[in-house]
Image 1 (cartoon, rainbow, N blue to C red):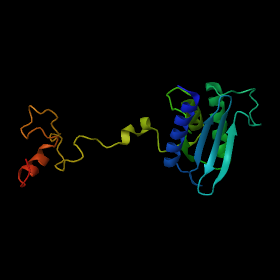
Image 2: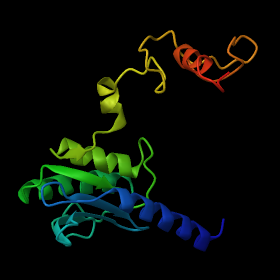
Image 3: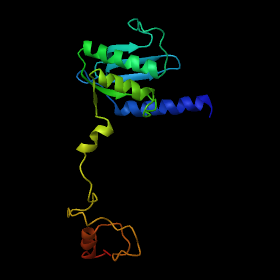
Image 4: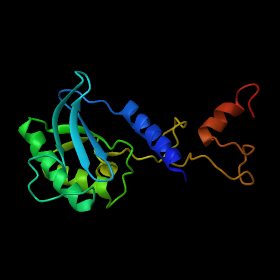
Length: 181
């Protein structure tokens, strides 16, 4: 794949994420940018259009030696970003990965986990922490009866209602109307 095409794909991914992620003074946007050599983290208030705090591999407070844009650097910058955010009075952030892919065990994941361990809370919660809070989906969304036995029957041969993808209560409603099945 050509480099200019890759950059265009990443720019579109970055724009798509930025349209969904907005930061405020109470919950700023934690923007993470990985270049080939360095890692930059900024806490941005989009309503006022200003940066509240920042950390990077090039920051003067990083005395751990020369850091690079690898997993070890991501761990160090994530911890430093959490400390800088706490000093600035930031507790909850909205995570903006800036087009970087969020791979489990990758640089973005390590940086985010290091910031979480430093005391930052991410909004919304990661999906693995939301699993217990989700509602159970025993019935399809178009079924109003509430019983779990009214799932849509996907097979056409066994469906007495003519092969529709409706639940039993919806088929009964359609059967009683003129023009229904």
